[in-house]
Length: 508
Image (tube, rainbow, N blue to C red; front, side, top):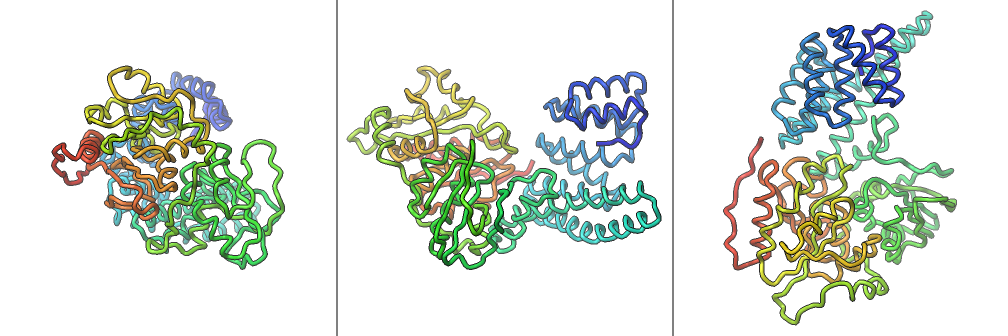
């Protein structure tokens, strides 16, 4: 956020912005611009607010106005490029980042953002170069800034000392972001030995937005020490799918000699996680939580790092989660009865994930109507496993599809598991449901986007080594091409249908 060129009215607008009073801040910025239309920083900061509200066209115009007023405003160039990145206008974003870096070659935040964009364009070697530029440059510059801050402080120049400290902190944040992004890229490429250590930066306190928050416990984190006779608490992190995928490591802690394994997980996962026999206690993360006093704590995804997991050593024995008999019985009367005809199939469908996911615009189907080619396949009954706001889309289809909406709501993941266990197949976009099916060793077809494909699905593969034999991956071959994916799914579901011609991946 630009704040260096001010005036009292502008500074008040910045203060409101920093306090999260967005409506008041927007009004204040517009008042500044009404009296001073050439105020570049006000245009930039207004654009930041507009982008946060999803008003991308207005934000783009405001950024461009700021740049026109001050062509050397690298922050505005970087911000505009990020907007292009988030709206899939990758070539325009790349040009903006490079313009900013030409003006300021040591603008490491822009190098990190450029790496994200290049990774989205599948230019992985170029992305690696951008992230390494951050790691090398920032690592050299931070100590120099600290020395300069100390010298300024010794001279009594506290404003300069504080400025150098702020610059060093900003660089530490960018460095933590670059480590995280570089780690994800190594994991995506299957380079797990290089990726797991960098992936620990997800809870680096200097990250702009840590994606995992460690527990506040009076015991040290587990870093591979002997667990013989020791107790350990596994603390929840990130999304439901992450917790399900990495629950496979919990029995390994017992193999390492842990006397007690306690799992803290999000409440909707609790009854499903209780099916893991090697876990002594499962506690919900929500509510008034009374924790035991373990010897160590650990985050689920750090277990892969401590395990030394490679592609060849993934703990992939399936199933490692189970549906309870009680839940199976409860759902048996709700689901359609199985036909004696082996050609008849009952297939569960999920077409959207949470809208809050950073890549949801790419990973979720924009419309349930895209699945229409499946409705023409004889002998298949489709069951909606969709939850959340988009579940109502199934109701709107009415009699235009064989998609069945269940008569009672899905309350938690134990319900989901009990339903999936009684299906022949699950077809889903990249959501936690894929991990539930995989952990149950139930056949599941996962529909993957071209841009922002999650690291765990690796590159180009049609199988998943985390769920061998259970998951099959159907990938977009160009940006936004869900129609091609659904055609291939329909051909696989209906062997008598002519398979669509294969297409090469296209960059856009």
